[in-house]
Image (tube, rainbow, N blue to C red; front, side):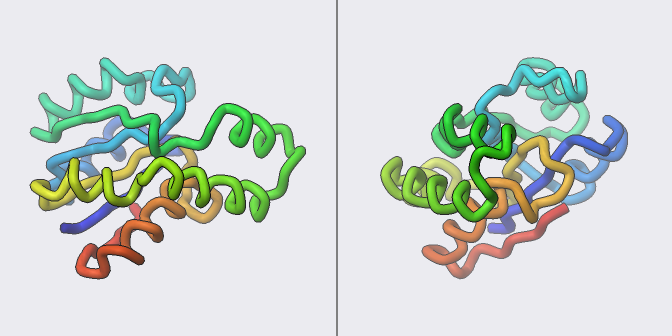
Length: 146
């Protein structure tokens, strides 16, 4: 499996869907806490599901179990916690939720899975943290941040 990660902000709909299609992704896993974002109209949950199926022949699932809690996310956005503290809270949360094993069980049948969040780059995004946790347990998986 190739595990991609992508953020939709700072991308046009054309750029976003061409990346999905050109990398032959067959499953996009939306790991945002809220998939009704106003940041980009094409990235709203039900619309996104439709566009992915019609344009890219790609399935869609919104999986909030891979998202941070509202408290963690709000604290980071309001700068009451640092990125390092965010990481210290997010990783144990994923361990408690058994996120990596659930990911492997749910998505093993796919060849190209993509983790979606809003951040334009992976450096300060939970999609990178989750992908690193997955690869640590399943080293045969290759990660590509696009």
